[in-house]
Image 1: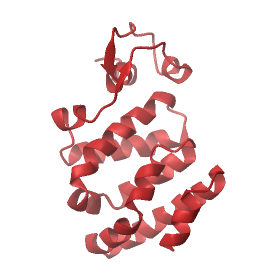
Image 2: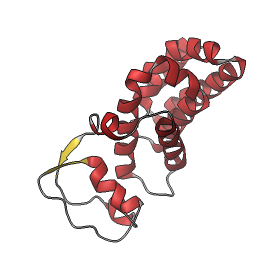
Image 3: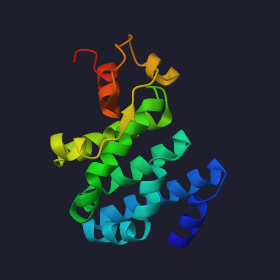
Length: 169
């Protein structure tokens, strides 16, 4: 199964990649029911594929990848704690080009919430966030809320998203 998932995840078309991630999601969920050690056994084989799919060009694939990690979160925190801040940063970055109606938004935010519940906050997260040169807001960013003054110089990507997601900040 793992070999088939890896093959599907590397396919150029989004439909097979989504199919592979859905198989991975349900395989990981079934393994998590059996316990964290079984979930870790599945993750050991597929973690790199799932992590890569978190930044897939297709929104549905990103959603399935985030749901996969969410379904076996305990195993992720126990065995891949050194990578959780990087994963969280990638998830925040993926929100740049989405809005609340995209398929991945709920799954990405749920996984971010789980990561923060397990200690991926503050300095750990900021150390992994991409620093992007200031540039005009994308179409997706302008749909997130009222205009925010354009940042000056190089700023963390998160600094551009948070004010638009949380207007009270």
